[in-house]
Length: 162
Image 1 (cartoon, rainbow, N blue to C red):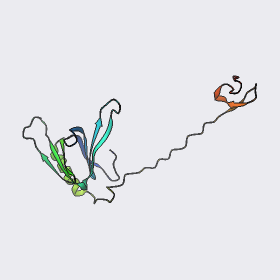
Image 2 (cartoon, helix red, strand yellow; image 1 turned 30 degrees about the vertical axis):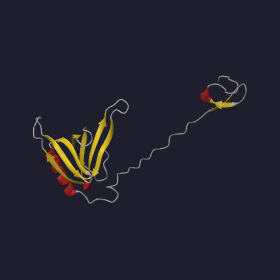
Image 3 (spheres, rainbow, N blue to C red; image 1 turned 30 degrees about the horizontal axis):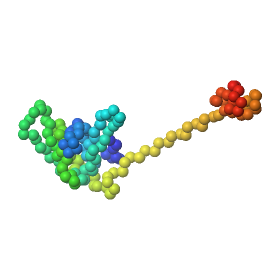
Image 4 (cartoon, rainbow, N blue to C red; image 1 turned 180 degrees about the vertical axis):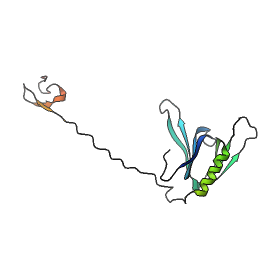
């Protein structure tokens, strides 16, 4: 995940999206946005990361916890539901109350929305020096007197070796 200027990760952790075909990945909450990324297994593009959700916090209106009626696990794993401008997004996360608390603090401290979809990404200018030009050494064939590149090893005109 690439952070924007002034953006910091408030909390992150493993999550399973119940909205995106029960995909397992990492959920990030920053002071600007909510991001869900999945690392895809496979033979061709193994380990490639896909971003399934990247929402600015001003488009997320609420977060609440839905507890299961029957507890099967020993740790606190419940459904965390975010209310967005397009509907609800559900995740199964560990310690959802902590997530909800971080979300409430982020919404309270969030900067006002910026026109254009959020803060501008950080741009870094890197100076890469040009590669040195390859030098070619020309040789003159002792037999036919034509010139050729030394790296060839033999004259292209008459075939003599140097």
